[in-house]
Length: 423
Image (cartoon, rainbow, N blue to C red; front, side, top):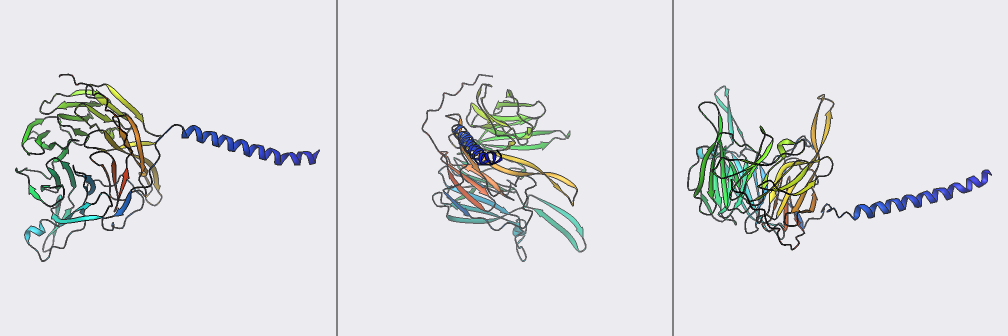
């Protein structure tokens, strides 16, 4: 009897293994049939273009800095990488003008087909702010690197670094200053519409009564002529975007996503933020009449409040608030991150760090997700991404490295847009 039981055990194990294999195979078929876009871990090319990073922690305690470096496609599809070097350029001996510009702005033009640097341009730039401390024999001046940003417009590449703001041709061969002066352009926030035809400056100003308001200036990108200029008593700070006709913003005091036409100061609610990462419900206008927003999901809606699409993000993934829009407005890329709490034993404190970063690309004509890219290794310092004008390419900056991915583009007629109601 005992021998029979011993003989039966291998048979039972074999049956159990076959059952488990069948179960796993069936589960693979079920999950594979869902058609969820897979991570694209094989870029068309990947190359290192920026200098070595300074030594620092390998863990990422917060989101990487997006204010010192980035990538952008010009309107003709040229790929540009920009960076402000945080190391102070040697200024002794030097002129006073050089001492007032102690940092270096790099502009690198890459060949989109190969990733090779075809043009390198460097120029000195001024500090974002300077702190002065008394010191024996004089003053010790500590300068902070300026924030850098490059915007693709129909009039050229608008480059902002510190106080100066300049306009370059797409090939960086020509450069000209803006035909007007801005009193405090180091603190002005620049926005550009998805078409590249409209530029908006937002200057948050403190009144004599110690109240703050936004002073908006809207320009035609090709002629650089002012289209609108007005003040708004409730200032806008970060979570907003523009189209060629108006603004979409999140209002923290009223817990609303709202839209307004330029110069009207009349806001119409279109939805409410989702999820616990309230500040990352970035409203992104991808046309004059349609926008997306969301924290734990992507919501596409018309400017009159009609929901067009909803896509719930995977568990524990939330929007970072950073998005990119292709020039035609059909394709949108959204950055998602997964946070993880980490405890420092020596410091006896815990903090949140980024455990994973994914970029999701959506086809707004088909109203579905078409690509997911996992950003690895996790960036320690620089992180940015951009879509080509036609939406067929996704460029990702991960610290020193730039990678280019192909976006699967399908031919599809764009759904008829919802007509906006007259306010």
